[in-house]
Length: 326
Ligand SMILES: O=C[C@H](O)COP(=O)(O)O
Image (cartoon, rainbow, N blue to C red):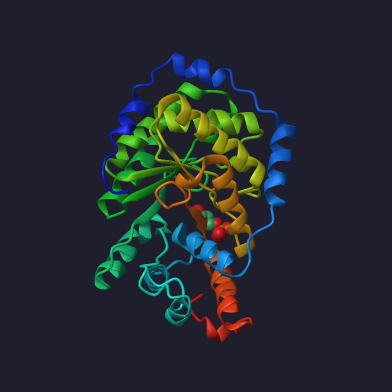
């Protein structure tokens, strides 16, 4: 994940007006999207060891997140400790998975907390990506200069991944070229850091706008496209994910460039995490089932996954004190 990807240059080589023409031709069939999402949600999930294995896979794709006004160095420290050892050691031992290096994919925090996360991981002598939200998260309603400075500072403080929010006003008023130019500037400000571009889908009005914004974000060099900040009233939904992963698929078919997908916001149950994995497998294939191309942005999901794994191993559900860090 850390090194500069030459494929990005390929994305950059797309230039207007061909960009714009592609974007303007987009139309999304709303009913077909809803039908496909329902179909995926209705799939039967595996049981027992199959389910446990998929849940562990989900753990390795989580961006373990805290984005609260009362975040402090100590709760960021706890978050990092949990990210390093997301499932209790004895549970992993029972599954013979203790030596597999299972961690979450990253920790994700506000820009002001990046140094806390970097420090905690360094003190533990542990290497795990630190992601920072940026660009006036969650609304993106600050001056461009401020948004760019925020990206640069997060990277300077040690973030190796930056989750930027798009300017919804530009998408809602159809200013796709201006949106492209803004995201390109964020891309440059990120330098070597990976950029995940948050669409805030709950505020984009319709699926066609979601598809267009996703295309523009990918053309501008995003490593991932992400559904939501977790702060909108509608966040990651399966229908919207279908729209975004189809954009990823078409972008790949046209450019050969693989962009990752990160649903985020309101993902709380182990069962949901299995549906997300099914969606990725069916829509984009096995290659998109690992943290280099798939992340789950979530603050509380891990607790439910650990509870389900506890149940798989012991045959009963844990009391809260039995999974104290969850
Ligand atoms: O990017 C991650 C989201 O902000 C987390 O949202 P959540 O607290 O609903 O899990």
